[in-house]
Image 1 (tube, rainbow, N blue to C red):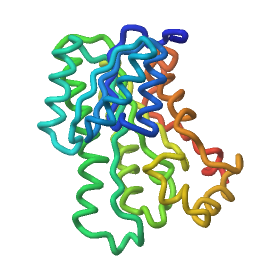
Image 2: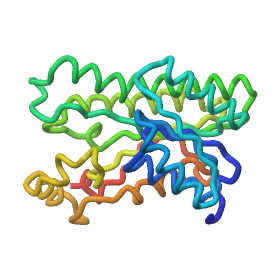
Image 3: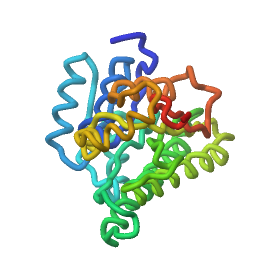
Length: 255
């Protein structure tokens, strides 16, 4: 364990089976958190849970469809049954089933992208806030993963970008409405990060070079470079920060 900035806190991380979600769960575990891990496939979650246990931490892996309100409610119920409470929420699960001109996206892909990336985040926030209110919690923290695609044009990923813009808007409004309850809500906007989710760009030299040439640090990022920001936003170190979008993109949006 490290400095234990999240000691004894129970944190739900969605999309936790790989990429940024896995890196975030491991980083939180190193800081003393107990993790509830959610994603579609149990097998991947079990592997991450084993890594956390090897660090000396606790983890509960729960396969969950983050686009289904009933499944999200069950996730929170099982987390409370196992650990008695939930202290923080990381909305990281995402879907991007279509890569191509925005105007040509099939309706089914459009619906799925919004179902996971917007409706799923919102329903998780609803469950979390209800839980905090029911147990009379004095504080809480929600961290949503957005994207630079929600801040700028997103060629070939237009609908995905739309959902991330919606996440930013949701983050700001929830921060305003929940501030009086000392529930902080922030978002992280990564640039191009080397994950399986971004493999269509990272593993395509032409597309990757287009992004890297616009990035002052002249490279793409790694999941661990995002995970440390999550720890900060979940911890008391960010106690006066809410309603913000933390951009971590190697400087791309500065150009």
